[in-house]
Length: 208
Image (cartoon, rainbow, N blue to C red):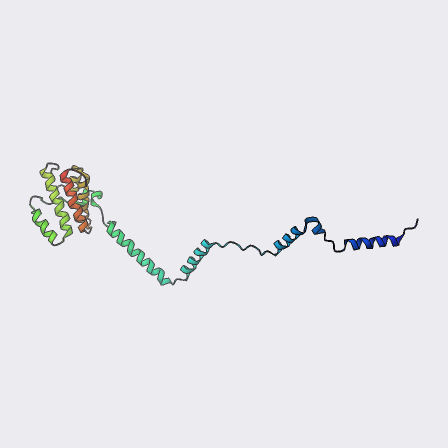
């Protein structure tokens, strides 16, 4: 049976005319979803988050790198001066005879041959702090001997007396005396005031 090609062609033309302009995407997902998809495509890419902490340290590093060499030299000199001052004030440059042993010490003065009260008044008027520390210590030794808490002998060393009368306040007094007398540590008004307070505590038998 012969095929009617005219009818087939007419049918194809009809189908093409029916489906012309038909959007399969819209029919499948709907107009709203297509519109939303188009809007998403137009959105700009998200910007990366800024690392403010990293930028700060980078700025500090760049600033330090741009400083001239003489600035670092000045900082180093100031730091070294501050460190040296602290070491001097803390007594790190001076030996501590009370820990080093009796071989660096000498016997004490004759505490009964010295007019302690008169010399102490004179030292205070002249602001001789080293003499004040020495005389307060000798005065305390005399008190301890007279109260039979130590057996004073001119050949005994301060460390021997500190062991003979094991009292915290007297131990601190002995350490201050040795640092000033043998360690060449610079005495101060604060040390003199502390020696006075410690001496009173020794007399009372308590702690400073």
